[in-house]
Image: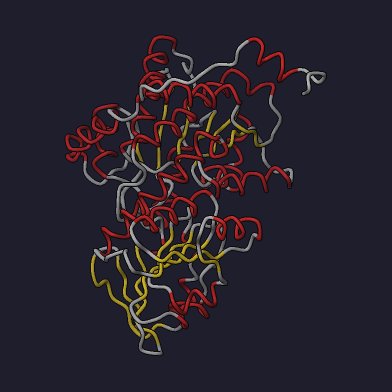
Length: 418
């Protein structure tokens, strides 16, 4: 079995951490038990480009239990947990191509390594796998049947491909499931991003001016948690409705040009390019901390920052200090990559339980239905979304009411008014 991990001897520690994560993933565990009995994925090959974390390992174990031949590479050069990668190879016999800190060339060689298995299904986080498949490995497209996409940035890219008529097989936007973005994006990103910032800097959050660029679900979660730790939270936005919502939620809203002058800590969560630019770096006060929790590091104009930098050094792990022409210092965390995975461990397993339950059930859905689907991006079927929410509540010992026959009749009628 081919694989490429940092050190296979780390497998024992990785296995313990995977076991710990599994204890908080009851929905995915239940799916794995069913998959092991029914083998709904028997005979398929699935290539995954995901963050190689303990929670992702649980998903890979679930797919293999269902009968799939699965391979995985990292969806970000800094997001791999090397002990987890080693455990998947040694204990689960799953080919892994991922090393934390891998360079650009290695990153793409790993993507090509999982594609070499000629998969029929893809599981992506950011759409790099799909992009390479459509641009450099087109000979494999004829064998593709379906796929899934985990994150907002990837869904944006895929919908653009579909709109341009270049997407060659159906893909389900797992990110758009309510049991994914309401919880993973909001509560997972909110907690894990602050975790990454604190681990990297050991700075106090209370009393700072904490600038959140973007008020989508990830931005909402981050703003909520930063305020809970005592920060003065400032929101920057380009969407008037989102900006209005931030105001109504009690946050200060202003343009990035103004926020740059007062911010202590900046974090981008937009999914767009060059959100914080050279002109903004020039306005920041001495010692400002800048990071990103969107999928790609393009949200920060790091090339522009380098142009006005006279010297830089790694002042502590995951903190690069830039000394600017004006003498001020700007600290960039985790190379501008996902700070919650670069300096911390990513989302807690209890929220990834729902996200990866969606992944598992959507791959099963694709196996059953891909032949009837067009070359387009699809939402998660409502029945799957509701099933996951119901099972998550049940695992927490929480139960809810059901509609009575009378209520169902009332909601389906038009002639029953006051």
